[in-house]
Image 1: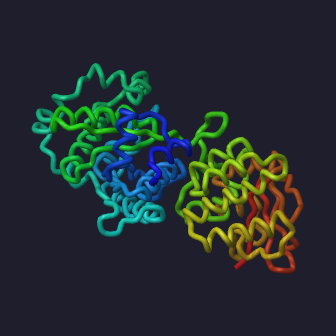
Image 2 (image 1 turned 30 degrees about the horizontal axis):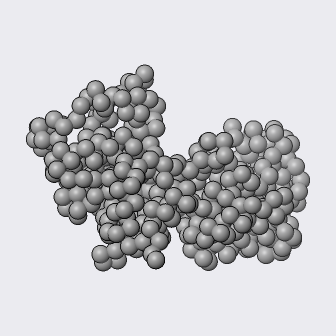
Image 3 (image 1 turned 120 degrees about the vertical axis):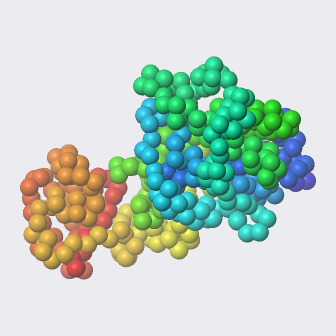
Length: 408
């Protein structure tokens, strides 16, 4: 008997809200559904907050359903107000085109875009050509302002002010669902739980315009056991681009999560069988570190590939388990003219810290060591003695971050 993907998603903890639970389960069990998830190209890389949506999509595709990854080249010109207390930065068309290219490459890690398997669409293809008067007459007439103002994404913005530009976002996202329904017979929209109001708007529009049924499912946002969003680091978001966050730092993030979050992350962010997920999640004490290493390896392998995952694992073992191979530890370099510069300047120059203020705070709080020597003076200079026999310095930032510093 073939497993229904609905049951897989439910068991693994993906499902949060569904528009028609029984109908959706029945449809997913007997039909091949075309569905879509939207990704706003507001940066040239996706981050770990998108990872759960990518896994949601991958499970659906593996069960035989057809994904549409919709990049919002048009809506990104406005910006989604969902989950925001302020207005998003305006992007140029060139910014968006560059971001779209980066996003497709990352999605391709988990989604098969070969002929007929999945579709990559860009809503700029239809939104840029719209006639505003026709759009408002044809689409706007179906949206109740009173109802829109009750949506969570708008309620959060009412105190600080919601621009009419952003107010149009729900109409455009609803219109996206309608176009995809007409063009590809897309009958289902998936998304993070913060997209619930937008999903309902699109479903309602299809019902009114096409007299057809459409469906929506949301997945839980990736949060820790305290309900806070995961994926924030000292340097900002946990990006999926190796040029923004190295595979080693990506590996270390998952290796260092709280014990209470291990089983949830294994369930949502890996394809390990659930029996194995539950076994690893039940480990206690020092044993749970084995589960964290498996989690870190599996997640890094999915995003960065097996070779990068192996290198990150070897580097972690070299640092924390008495290994000797330091070749895969993140490396930063300075030129000879910086050899006797202030340590603080070197930290900023090599991007070990994002700013001098952050570097001062790190040193003042006792969080910086070079070759096991704790640096306590914010004005201290880099000394030749810091370079070891192998020709590098090992800089430790906080408890878990390591960098090899070499002089070119």
